[in-house]
Image (cartoon, rainbow, N blue to C red; front, side):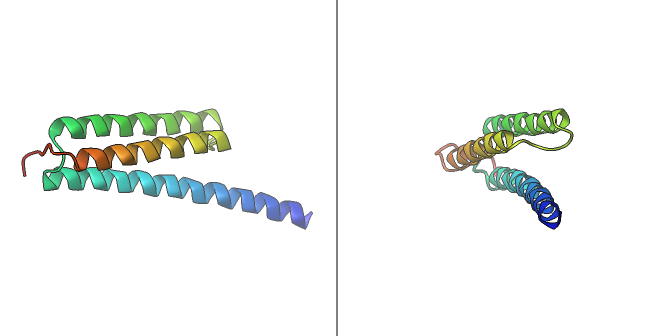
Length: 103
């Protein structure tokens, strides 16, 4: 009985940690976009495209959670992580290209 309770608690804590990690990553990426706008590294068009993709990811997370009682499956977590990795790379590439916006 104790072993099952410990396992259940560990699984719940892992889910909470992953949810916090997703939240932290999304906030970090929003900060990176805002810093790119402030520094002039991102144009209005680049920013709009990045924000649109961020919104798409956020909606997908909300839909997935709604479909699973507020939780994400391991497959969904892996997919979201992959999407966040791609979005992070897009942010980097757009901030470091030769195109700049107004300061």
